[in-house]
Image 1 (cartoon, each protein chain N blue to C red):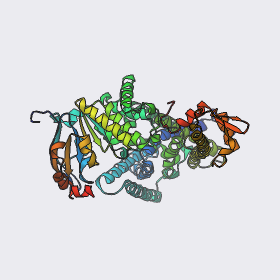
Image 2 (cartoon, chains in turn blue, brown):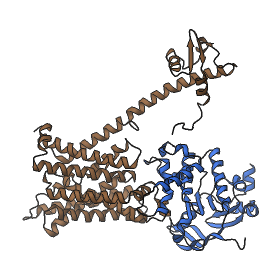
Image 3 (cartoon, rainbow over the protein chains, first blue to last red):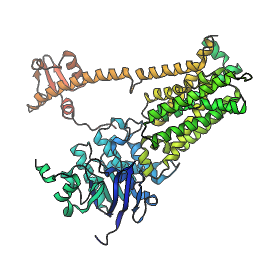
Image 4 (cartoon, rainbow over the protein chains, first blue to last red):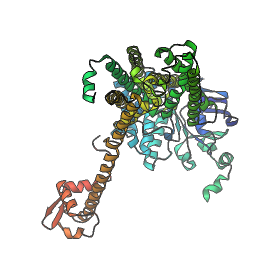
Length: 246
Length: 374
């Protein structure tokens, strides 16, 4: 991996709300084309890490670069799937309208989405198998369908790097499989995908790269090399093997 | 004067026309911008801003000695904006939640405003008559120049809203995501808030500090009941607001000059009540009707499903069976059998029923949740 292009590079990143650090001196490199899980206990700073990379949260110190340049210059290369609980699903709009929002970044200020944007949005909905629901009011979607709409919105951004905050949270098995298949397709297309993930059991099956995080970075690398009891214990503070076998 | 006379007079009588036009325009702009406040869950912001405007009015009078609404409203605008920034400051810089910040600013500014008002009243030579109209509003004092100002501000707001429609919409739905797309969310946020402050300040003379937030929220809350489309909601809220203004003025003018502001607010309240009960989508009445209908439909489907179970066991699905065998099944009545026949799902012949291919297919697909005709 020495001469591999780095999609994301983070140096000395520290984030704190008030005095307590949430992320402490993080150095992290994500090679291009990996499907990476960020794992760690609650409060480990997983979502904060993603939000800081995306500029939603300002760090106290440290830099983030996307393909070697600051994030502010590379926005169009990056797509984001927030936690689905972060918005009000009773907002008066349709599924298609939400997916269309993915095209707003490329449109820029003031310009209205037109036929081209609608076509992109419809194609994205097709990929997540939600085309039949395009005119549905979003409050009438199930949790899994809402997650697919968010995924479709990110696909409509047509980015190179995808950041996803717990896309499997509260979705059924069918949706989980559908989502992971899309993520694997993205990787096949050479995209980089970074996912905050909670289910340790599925890490080896779903991902090829993993980062252990608990305020500090514990380890990062290929799943087959570093996804072991040692790192799990360091991250979660319990003897992981024992906990799973019980 | 009764209401009918009012509507005849409104076209010819200069004063009535001015006041009616003023309250209508005010209702429209407040309904429009109130939709944004409601969707951002900042309903109380309007209340805080309008109360925060009061000391500005008093100070503008103290400093300039002017009594014209233009000067006083400029004062209101300044203190309203200051109040808004303090609310934002308190919520971002301290651990206090926004309801606390709103309550604090509302009462402190309002208290200060009241203090200034009583101070002005005690001045021996002060021609203070007219300042307290900003407390409860007095539509009768609207002049053509006031209405012209309202129309200009409404026009500007409308233009800004159409221009930044996409940005407003995405910020209302998902602010963090908007930021990641590269939009300056602070700018959009300040723009929306500033328009709301403008609308509130415009309404102070007519509706007053105390009731202002109602005219901002009521039309929007009513409109939300009727539609699931943001554009339609904003438009409907503007219409509801304008109608509240017109009918409020009509009622107040025809009933011995009842105070206009409160009447407008009450009319807007009637719109809300009506919408909560009668809207076809979210209204209480139709929800109850839908609930009952769903229950009958479900019972019907249960019966069909039971029949499907029996029909499945025969090679010929349309093999006739005795109606008697259904007797021990809950949910089966003569009425429901008739309904099933009407749908073409079963055929009844004397004391026997048989499933039709259509009914068989319906029962088969009952649990397929994909929408068929969307």
